[in-house]
Length: 185
Length: 87
Length: 250
Image 1: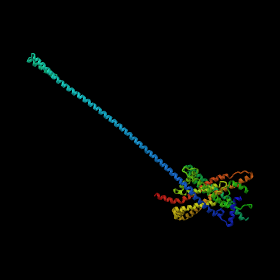
Image 2: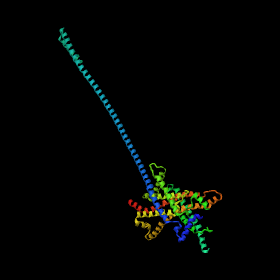
Image 3: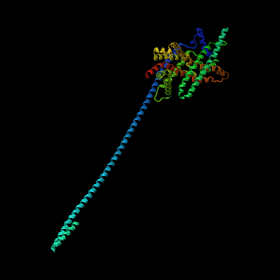
Image 4: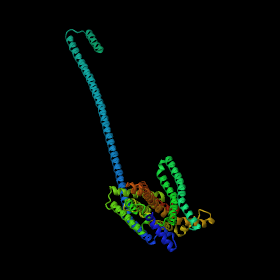
């Protein structure tokens, strides 16, 4: 035990020799204290300069890096989104255009069909009308020819009859008959 | 040896021997209560465990420092005790 | 007896703190500081965006104290990280130095711990004056505006005494923990291990559990010291910054 507490005992002895003192009893030495204070302040300064500040700077730079990366990611995502929506809009537009064109073509075709039908009908009507007109004309012509022919025939017959024996009475009766026959027609 | 010196040394010996244990008893009870309270708090709110632990360590350190004061006093008193047998 | 004690003492190197003259502790403080600086340079000399193990450890330590300072002191507490962190690391290295056989814990001497406590307390006063002004500094002592005027002088005395008690309790807590641990280990060695070795030549490390406890104590005491540093700083600066925040809020 002596070596264990030898220092304290010698301190106590020294303290008693000097009249006693708690500080000496506890082993407090002002020179050592000041050395320790200065030493720790130096350590603090060096540690701040070479340990804490570099780590702080590193963490800060990494934080900014991460922020920048996330920002870029976000921007990329947004750009992609925009591109996609643009493409979609364009696609929709193209589709709409195509549909419109088809619609237009269909409309045109229908119109064309209507027109063709209408034309055909008109032509047919025209043909029919012309045919009818022609028929009428032909008929009239024929009737006129017939009239002329009948008149000729009558005249010729009359002449022949006259050349033979023809009484007045008989003549008249023939003409009337003839006229009557013609009127019946 | 005079009676006065004998009484002084006796008191010194009793104080040296009993001072620290008494402090330890009190501090142990106090630390037990503090730790129990902290554990209960952590069990009730595990999400605050970190802060409770910090507070608990702080409280334990404060309680402990009281024992350590008496420990230092114990050493001072022990140094006052004379060695027996001329060592 | 002395021979055996020296043998076991060399094997464990604990419990010899009481018989060592103060300058030896300063030498071991220097050793602890140099070890800390070696760690610091090794961790930061080649820092990269993708950290290695040492750099990662250093960053974890930094972030731990950063979080602690911000949660205790507030956003302006970030500037106290170097002080609190250096105190923690130095005390931790000192304490662990006492557990490595040829080493002695410099913190088992009052000179070392009082030096640390004085630095902390003087810095706390400096920060208090800087944050509150010289008038606010004394008003803070008197709890002006928080207690009735006639109690203020009494509060002033109480607060001054408690302010003076801070370095005492800070230094003695650390010193007595380390010194006490070594004394207990030494008592076990001298009372049990040495007689056992002399009687039966069995080198049984009976003090070993105490050393295990010592590892825990090394971390806890280092943490408590820096935690209290931050809390003292928070106590003296919270008022001023609190008012600032109020001013911003209105």
